[in-house]
Picture 1 (cartoon, helix red, strand yellow):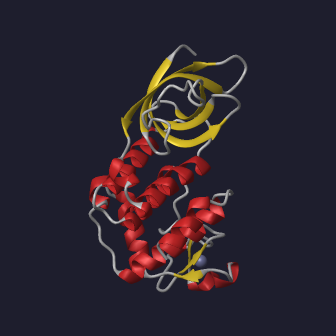
Picture 2 (cartoon, rainbow, N blue to C red; picture 1 turned 180 degrees about the horizontal axis):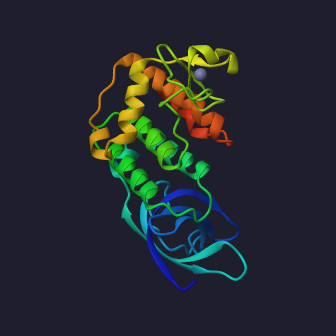
Amino acid sequence: MPIQKSDGILLRRQDLRETSILLTFYTRDFGKIKGIVRGVRGPRAIFGGGAYELFALDEIIFYERKGGEIFTISQCDLLNYFNPIRASLEKLSYASYIVELLDSVTGLSDKNSEVFDLALNSITLLAGHSSSRRVARIFEIKLLSLLGLMPNFAECANCGSAAGIQPRFSLRHGGLICKKCLNADRMAVSILPGTVKFMEHIRSSSFERAAMVKVSVDVGRELERLLRRYLDYHVERRLKTVQFIREIAP
Ligand SMILES: [Zn+2]
């Protein structure tokens, strides 16, 4: 692979020995990549100007190293630091959650430019005046949809017939189950029609339209709870930022 250039959102930063850091980016053109930047720590460090901070949008130049999936990043220029997010503890924790979730559900070099656009749009929206909670829900639903993990709302996830009235939501079956199938998952929980409607609406709308949608307090709470459980069920790694958000914004 020759020298490559792409925009990327910084998902993770790990300090290595001496003056190097290992950065994980979700790039527009290559999906998730890991790369080493040298000479950025210590007394003679090159000033990064915020490019090495979590969820910064950078333009990176990188090339392959011998025998490995970790690249050498030779240049990393800051495109957007998202100042308004860093000025608010709440926004900061939600942006950190977005990149942590993205890191946990994607594999190296799974290229998907729609996922990149979704993450960038979500972080940009968070930097504006939108509610952090709403941005997080839109990001979660659209991400599930892009990754093919969206719950099945079209019919009963167990028997395939119409979900009917008062269906329940099953984590195990990944969708609604009808009244006849309650024995298929005793742990299935009730779900408001408004919650199903909202998730379907977000999935099928453009990001711009989704960003305008408002929900009732009840649906908002249920969405947060259900999506958390659904994501915890499908994402193996426990996310550190989830607990942090609970502590600062119960
Ligand atoms: Zn059924």
